[in-house]
Image (cartoon, rainbow, N blue to C red; front, side, top):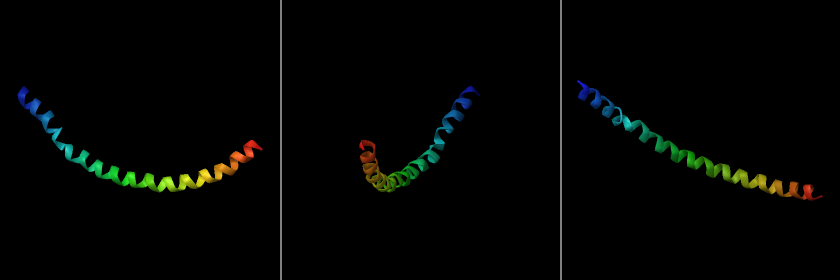
Length: 56
């Protein structure tokens, strides 16, 4: 019976299919950062003027 319990743990690793669904979700997340990058570039332009105020 101990061998069977050893097999049950092995069956748990098999459900690695759900984890595989996560990678696809990571791709969408990668697309989100790109969208955040454009906005980030816009704020930097505002930071530029702020830097001048700091120097003033």
